Image (cartoon, rainbow, N blue to C red; front, side):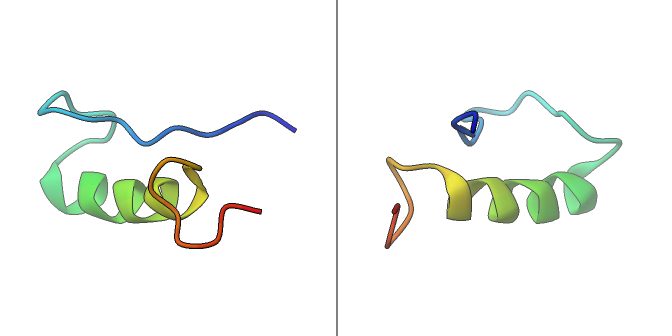
Length: 39
């Protein structure tokens, strides 16, 4: 399985900040550097 990393900075991957916030919350849960239980 590929490792998912949460983006950092102000570059948008979505259409706007509300969508970007939801996307980053999901990605932060999967990012091993940020996740509480990365296993």
